[in-house]
Image (cartoon, rainbow, N blue to C red; front, side, top):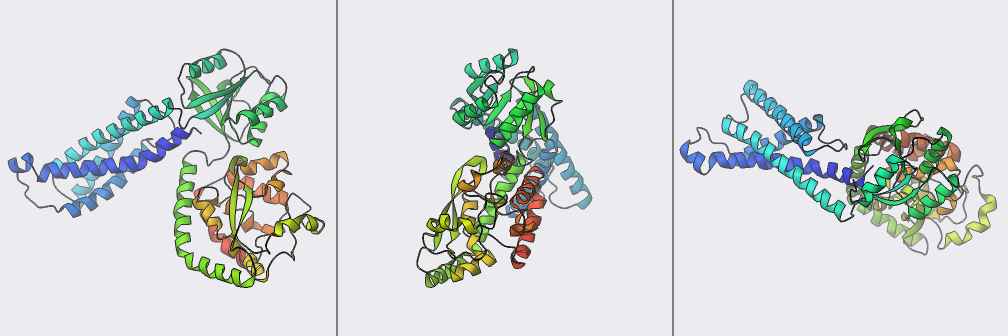
Length: 461
C-alpha cells in the first residue's frame, strides 16, 4: 500500500472536520456581525458557544456522509471526481440537517446560516483537498514517501512503467531495479530483493508461467514485500486481491493482510491512545515494581532485548528484569534443558536464571508491561504475533516468515488460545490466521480475553 495514499486518507479526516467547523463559524460570523446583520437584524439571539457545540455535532455527521460518498477510500481519484463527491456529500448532509430542524424545531432557524454553511463547506473542503494534493505532489517531487519498486518482466507494459518513472512520473513510486522473467531462478530474485529492499514487486509480464508467478508471490510474501501483477493474470490464486490502476494499466495487487490501508490507520491510532492511557494509569505500578526488583536482586530495573519486528526489522524490546544480571550469557549452557524442541523457541519451566520476584512477575505477566513503551514508539502493537529473538527467527521455516508481516504484539491470538501449551507451529498458525483475518473487533476481543489467560497461568514463557 502506497505510503502517500495512507497519509492522504489519514490527514483528510481531521482536515475535513476542521473545514466544516470553520464553514459553520464563518456563516455564524457573517450572520450576526457586519453588513448582513445591519441590513437584516437577527430576530432571535443565538449564543456562539451553543452554536459551536451544534457545529461539532453536525461536522461528525458531515464526515459520515463524506465517508459514504467514498471520500476516505485509498483509491486515487481526479480532482473533478473528488469535487463532485464533496458536493454530493455536503448536499446530503445539509438536507439531513434541514429535515432534522423541520421535524424537531430545534437547533437554529436561520436560513442564511444553513445556506451559507453549505456553500462555505463545499468551498473550504475543496480548497483543503486541493492543498493536500499540492502538498502530496511536492512530497513526491522531493522523493519523500515514495514506495520503492522492483519491476519484473519485459515487454511493452514493463517498458512503459520504467519510461514513466525515469521521466519523473513517479505515481508514488521510485524504481530501484528491474529484472527479466526470472532469469537465474527464484534465488536470484531473492538476492536482488535483499540487496535493493523494494517495498513492492510488480510483475509486468503477461507471459510468465503460472508456476513462476506463484514462486514470485511466495518469495515476496516470505520477504515481506508487497506484490502486484498484470490484470490478465487474475486467474492466479492468492489470498487478498485488489484491482487498481497503476501507470495507466490495470493490475492486481496481492495484499499481505487485511490490515493494509485504513485497517493499519485504525490499529495504529488505537495503539497510540491505548498505550498512552495505560502508561499514565499504570505509572504507580511501574514505580512499585521498580522498587521491588531492586530490593530482590542486583541489577537494572529494565532489560533491553533484541527482537525482530515488522518486515524483519530489529528493535529493542523493554521488559522488567526477571532474571539475574547477564542471564543471556548462561543460555548456551542450558540449551540441553530446552523444553521447546518443536520449534525455535527456548523454555525451561524452572529456569535457574529467574529471580524470586521475577517468577511472580512472569506468572502474572507484569514483566511485560514496559512493552507499552514499544507500542507507543510504534515498534509493537497491543495485539499481534509474539516478538521473537533474532536467533529464533533465523530458524524459521519459510512459511513462518509471514509472522513478520505485521508488528508483534503484547498479546495475541496464540497467547489467549493456549500460550505455552501450544506447539510453535500451532502458535504460528493461530497468529497467521489472525493477521489474514484481522478485524478491529477481534483485537478488542483478544484484549478482553488476555486477563483470563494470565489468571489461568497459561502465561508467558
